[in-house]
Image 1 (cartoon, rainbow, N blue to C red):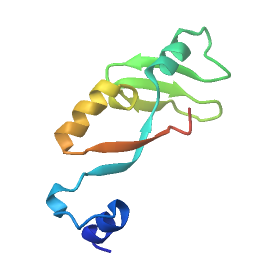
Image 2: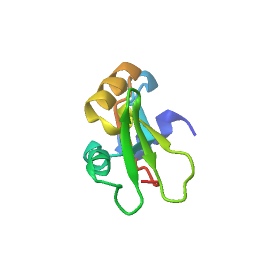
Image 3: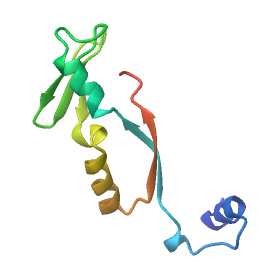
Length: 101
């Protein structure tokens, strides 16, 4: 299927020039910074989950998950994510929670 066909079907209008069509990232995950901070501030974590800040983001301990899982800073920061999207030429993202957390 061509981009032009998708745009025509979804907008009901004439086909767009693919170069001007919005770029949509349809697979992105987010972990709210407030959740990570709460896990970090709670003595012993919450329900077996724990988090600690690092220079590169966060490390999250998941019950029964083995080694801590990294959460990059832009996964928890809306401002960093917005800047990255602009730099990449992406119009928007479809977000879903990070299922491990």
